[in-house]
Image (cartoon, rainbow, N blue to C red):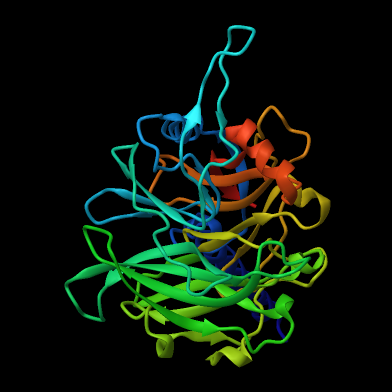
Length: 410
């Protein structure tokens, strides 16, 4: 081959390679990283958090207010929902009513306590307006379904009364539990129900059972849905649930997911359950998170969508679960879920020894510039007279506390 022909070919090849490299560089410069694109999915973690003394203090103010004897003075299982008129509905599981007393002690200071005979109900609801808690709805809001059984409210959504309807109602998911022997000191999981509340008066119109678990022989494998719920940009509400493995002294529970068309939360036939590949019937559902050891969730957890990423917060598995909140992330509500991430330990009351944090819950209706997350605190020994005596002597032990979180790339 003549030298000048070879030179022309080499020059053409070099120019082509150079052009490809330049074009590639231009494309890499022009396209942002996936995690920087709006709506893109990428690992997320808690980059900072601060105690929210305003919200924590508001529940202390309302609980200590002696003006009424039939209102909320403490509770756990904290969930919230923004109503169409701007009010916020707060839902609680076991709740102390009655009064809190503040007599002076011998040192001339003051302290707050409840009478040990103060009323305890299985659920309650408190209405907030403009950042102030205003009133407790008649409690219990959801009556016991049968002797020895009770209802705990969990996630709630505002949705059309029926698909396409212009009338809106509140749907509240309920956990039905039944008295049981140890280790089921918090009751045996029995069923998931959905209550319908009218708007704007928040009157209970009816309660429907959507998933009965009594035929599942092992109570540790029974799944209750509603620990958290998300409504996507389309027509689906995704409802997360979990089994109760921790009650049987296992390290971590498993998380499950169902989906329901908007407007049909109270229709048992409309619920679909994820089996790892497709949406199907309840008997075929499979967990989306949890290996029974290091990975898994507590008895209650919460999920938020941050851009294109779903972030799940739960108490950590093992001994750290008494004090530490950790997180997982995924690009879809069905997973795969990645984690656990590095945890953080929110503030506990001054009487820290013997006190545990639990039930982290996000509150999308609140917060500007961050995610508001609540957690409940309780005395570790929940059996016997001493437990209620401790809660009565220190009213701050049975009220929600709040932190504001900020998320960033993981």
